[in-house]
Image (cartoon, rainbow, N blue to C red):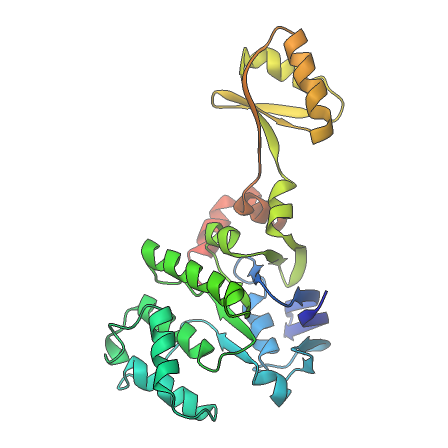
Length: 313
């Protein structure tokens, strides 16, 4: 697997606090990769190290084939970390022209206009950014991260402050960056449903450590259950629970059975032989939110999870 980012035993401490604790991670080239975790998991610390903004206490990281701070590798990256800030007296267009010049690019009105259009700021292109909403600043921040047309872009909470239509537009943009432009996108977000829709792979972090990593389809499939619309429910529950390695619970008007796919035919035969009427039997995958909450322990402390998600970053 051709990796654009590799970390080995990456550690960052602040006194007694270990923001990163021996993190080893490999992010493949291409596609959209999500980095998830509750507040304090180490996501922003990881991004700052990868961008050369802070130094790790121990371990190493390679980005775009170069060590942290390598100028050639840095020029092939773009980033937006937390809520972006720009000179308030500039217009959105002037910001992108200014940043283009700062990166040594020749003036190109078509490139600037093109990125403004793709992030949905064409109508606001010549407005001063002092009047921009948080969502508009996020859009401009994404455009600023992409103005150099990088091979890798790191986006921290790109949909923060956006309304539902804006979130959908950003999702479409992120997918197009991967599929149309060939840019590897690494993002962090608390919008777990959006992550499930937009990302190919995710890493779930907790307390500075990697607790789960893999393709979104694999992570959600690992928690799938067989939903049985049957009559009677109590008899079905008894039959399922009697099978080795299987378990079940009544949820609403159905029985949700946990078992392997290979055991499903035997279960259905047992239900029919037991006089159970089966209206429907279908596999239901877990969503990314349930995987996340299980892996981070938040499912045991829902009030803590709600409090953490309520504070972006």
